[in-house]
Image (cartoon, rainbow, N blue to C red):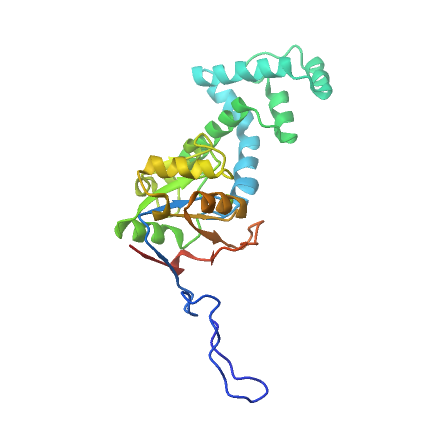
Length: 274
Ligand SMILES: [Mg+2]
């Protein structure tokens, strides 16, 4: 806490001047006139490292065993056919070489070399993304994956909900992935606390029009929505659309520059008023 400290020169101590009139040095952040909270996930309610250091390595490690076990599922067969078609059509010279080396491949693992190449190269391919989602689903169901939300998040979600605020998620991860994450947290299944889930199908997170669309979907005046994210560009877009915004600053976040926006480090700080 920023208690005023005596001046080293011995002059009379003056109270520290709060950086903003509305925010005395209590650490409380007051946001007035909101009915809705829209929350980003990575860097906002869950460490960024969970996706990079846990989810993606888990998917690559378990992809082969998943394909062996699940090849009979029609959904998996359809996805594998899409992967095979993409492999055939991929113009990358490295991929042609890979094709020549694995020409005789058949069965559920036929496209595995290409899938592994896509993962290594960090290439986005829709059926790969869906297969990864299925691997995570199984990992969560087996209790091998658990979303490590920041410790203050579950209590805050319950408190906001109880106070009558509506809660929504807006994340670039698919709605299915968002729901999987909130279904498996150290505080249990938190999905019912949220009434709306938005991903990039609603629009890009750096486009103001996406936030206008969210407000319309929530049936709310845009100014009565508070959006919290760790990405400055997203806050700028939400702000441009007329939302209230807060910058989430947490240990381990790649982005620490809040721009002109107020910063929140823990949801214990947030004081909402109707
Ligand atoms: Mg984020």
